[in-house]
Length: 443
Image (cartoon, rainbow, N blue to C red; front, side, top):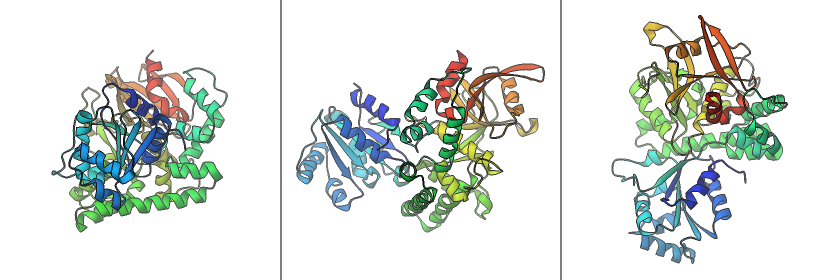
């Protein structure tokens, strides 16, 4: 079983003096169940696991009327007790039970020393106005596909990983080619744990395709199961089946991907699929002033769950990081990597575009870093054209300009339109470190 970044956060949660029941969220098959089981085995004397997708367990535990009744049912069903301070109580697929979702709130009050973790996929798709979500009574963590650094650890490249974690701007790095080659492998493989495990085990790309095909079918089946009507189902299925073809691109709801579907229906469908964490919409901003003012009526940029799935759905394995497809896929993997940093809270991802009346400059991504805005240009080729980034930076001296490319880690100086700009150059293989590299850049 691979080590995941979220494990550090789970250990902090375990020892926190203000700990509450924890809800771990993420799309199906990103590794939620596996990482919680591993965390339980390594940090508790016992793990009591309830899987609410198993009908016999759902029928027993869904009827619990309070915390004491729930714990009594555990004792009878499993012939063991959930012991405070020793046991991890793990409720998997909690979206199957509205009752238990609402019951979570009472564990913090009635059993504060009992460690409780619940996990849910497609949770938001099941929630309607009749559900009472225990806001303020539970903690949240988010799990995403494996990052490049997690991939390196799975590939047993620990020494290289240690070097990547310690390098600073301007420092000589002798293993750029090795790191770049492994990142290209990651771009092809993606970060879905089952696909990574298969590749680590046998290095067979055909098996990866088989796994991704199975995952894609499962997502389609899931979204069909949770749609509220046949008419809604067709829009959701269309997004899940074809949405990744828009990965790394700007899109509009009207006639999405050449369909004849109307804007309102597609907007609702895409927003639902976003809620279950299969995609992320990066919204346009035209001002750099905080708080940001998203332009929801402008085209969005699509970031799909995982670059491996994007490759599979686009049937794009040949010449993957050369040719026309490379620009799109590298924006996808950078966007995916930035999003994966949001283990505590979902990261809001934007792109910057001038108002239409002022020109056509666009910066690929923007994120807020403290009280400042980071503008990120993704350059998959060899020509560092940064006119849009300079245009954004010229409008606000507090903007932090970043170029992500195959070049090394360094601080660059550019002269443009009579002004000098300092730009942080981050190689693709260090994108996992973007926040702390920005801190280094700021000094």
